[in-house]
Image (cartoon, rainbow, N blue to C red; front, top):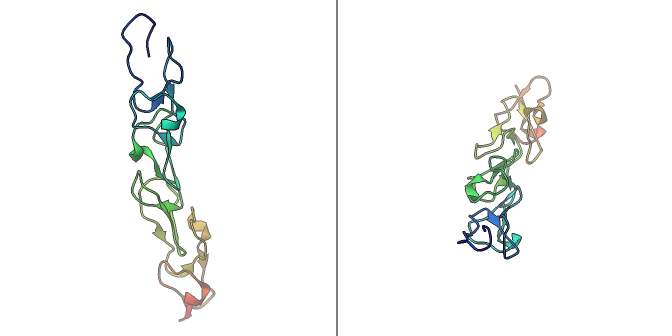
Length: 140
């Protein structure tokens, strides 16, 4: 990029320019990233891995690790994230682990984003933390 008649600079990673001549580089969209320097199309912008998003990365991201797990999913930043299993939840984004439902409760939901999905066991029963079905609630 740069003005005609002067030395040009390649678009930096996270950006691209589709036409020759004077002009500016365009940022890759949110939820994408590009490691390519001098990219000539938006095709160089790759989607973040499954169940991630680039909350911490504005448009123009050049780092896949800026793609973080969505709430309800867990894994390492920059990789595809797995859903939280039954009996767990995760309200925040990022690489944090899923939190087990408290003892005395259970949840059958997958990819839960709040503790409110954890249902209390019936009266005079108990369950271990992270229980995933009402049958885990046993008589005292």
